[in-house]
Image 1 (cartoon, helix red, strand yellow):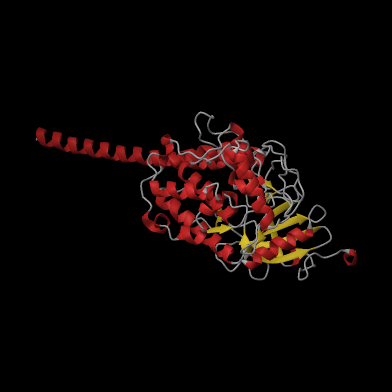
Image 2: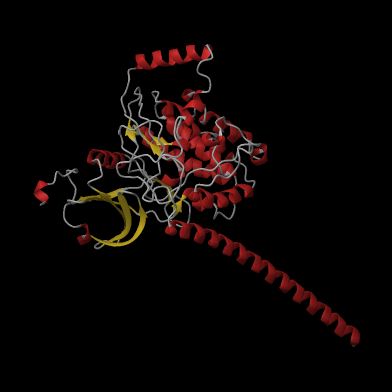
Length: 450
């Protein structure tokens, strides 16, 4: 039977993966893929095995993704592929096991959180991006779901999911409409030519959320202009606001490059240490709301929700043809109703054509005929209709599963129990002080009687 199969990977292993790995519990699930915890029978190394349905997968896209990950795997901040297996029914990607959890889920566990901690996070992310850019790779889907901590120490972040990534030459422009709407640069949403700077836009969105707990834009409620509400930003340093403003600039040439941002004083250690307690509280609330599709604030109070996911968060076809006005249920199991990865054809126009297009847009703008390009771009994507993805669509059609709700509320219970334990310690401390006072008073009374 195997002789009739057209193998996708030249060097893949075709014998049963169970011979080499002891496959354990399920870690995550998408429409066409499942991630399992496993252990190498010889070395004892723990890994994550992603099993992908062969029938519903474009093998060229999977090979491309694996190739890109191998191009940048030398960086310690990139999740590594250990091995590839395939049989008549499935592909199996054996990947480095990352046990620490997603970025935003873990920030709420920090004992102390300030701009200094946020700067450390951004420094790690930007360092990874600078490396993959140096290798000619643009990720195009930077978001918290794809940033995982290696372990419970919460010291090292890893970037995963290169399903929407691509290679790019120094003078080349890409035009595919791909990515996650919350983190998507406006030129990507418009279908204009774009370069590596789109990753820096995504970093700007992540940084904004790190400091206040909600994203900068929420097109579905009409919030499409960058602002910094005083209620949440009055104590934030002007230095980081300048970074965000530049990274989120509509003009891609004004954005910091990854190397430039790494050399910024705020990133290098000058960020304030003032605690951002309000941000932690907002994130805790949002970690529940984001899984149920609820919004955090009303339009008149522009604080908005975002998207987060699981190990299996993925996008769509690398170069799949798809209607532009579509959203996506991301390929993880978080039950998030916000549209996620979007993809459109990846044709590459000439620079002359792009210049003529931009010239026409400027002329239209002068005539008053194309105001609010960012608003148009952000609003051009539907926030309700699921995007039909070839292998990474959410398994439950945008609803929240019992398992997801269980994980969410277990996480909240964990924090409540932690708070309760702290209160108990305070009570014990007060009781000890009271007992000491009573003992002291008793001794005084005894002396007086004598």
